[in-house]
Amino acid sequence: MSWNDKQFAELQKHKPGVMERDIEIKSYPYSPETSSEWRRSKIDVDSSFTFILIGRDGGEKYCSVVPVSAVTLFEQIDAMPMRCSEMRKK
Image 1 (cartoon, rainbow, N blue to C red):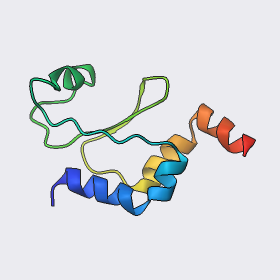
Image 2 (cartoon, rainbow, N blue to C red):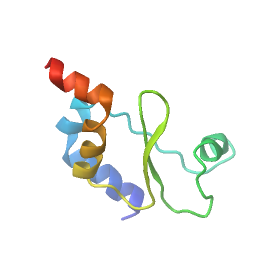
Image 3 (cartoon, rainbow, N blue to C red):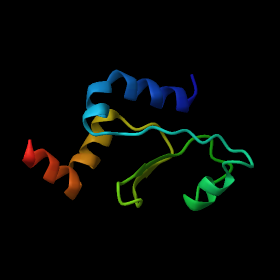
């Protein structure tokens, strides 16, 4: 199983948390059509996997070259000011 598959499987196991946090999952295999995404995120073309968390403001918030656990991802998101505000309003 590839790291990409492992990451998707991890997030699928925690789908309620993914949906609660309004996480959008995208995969950009390297190609001429996706090269601009790779350059913008400064991804090493020799890397077999890169996980990047992009905030609602469009900024990079977290990056890893190995699959990220849902717990780690949720902790990163839940510490963000917008998310804290959302949780207080609930």
